[in-house]
Image 1 (spheres, rainbow, N blue to C red):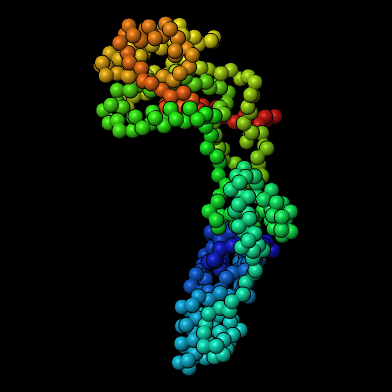
Image 2: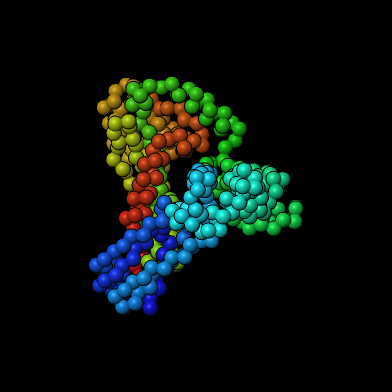
Length: 361
């Protein structure tokens, strides 16, 4: 006999030429049993395959919950003279459920569930408030740490799952934190002033800005967040492991620029340090100067405050070519829309480099 456990609300009873290998797909006769319209819950069910006959055994849970609407319908039919046996068959209920409901209505005149039924909460309202407070004070702690803190403070021992549920009830959820560079009060003030200055710019004004930046990528892997498809329990298989060498692997420095309706070619710097001279000769002359001529005198170059961008020879070149530069607040890479381009490029690099295939002998 072959036992197959399932968890579905509706099952099929098959009789015919269904084999153990094909399961229920090749059965000749299929009878569908649906429990969607009944208040009963399936505790467990399994298929037993014996020869050409497949039998479905379903065990219903002893605990049956009825909503208020169904309770009143049952009481109304009992008052109309319908027997409890007929109601049990019609609503697919056990006799004890109908009997207890009728007895409750005759004694109290109500069909509502008695207060206090069900499992009691493991924590009190005060303890729930305590979990909320310590989670707000220490947002980086884990649910296990909160559980230990609660036990040390109140003597109540709860699981980390209970802690998570209590925090979810208060609107706190575990999420990956946003990442940004460290900012001083001066940085924050300058960033806010820049945003307020440019928040009312029209699309025509932004269309004249060329957003540029450099970024470094590893040709073997990339630090940006990526995902893989794998089966449960196969995390450490060679086919599911991405090799990362933090101290090597060959990196490339690239430069690019974007406009509202266009972009520059992706420029890859050859080996060596990128200096102000290289920035002028490899970027400003062949790319930025041409874009300035295409856009016109309204053209604005956006580059950050890196040392190579603020070299004296770079300033002289921009002045000679009549290229305006946008004032950019320090430590503000998140304000540059080209960061989205780097994110897409990083994911493309990570996808292009496949996972190491397992060795085959």
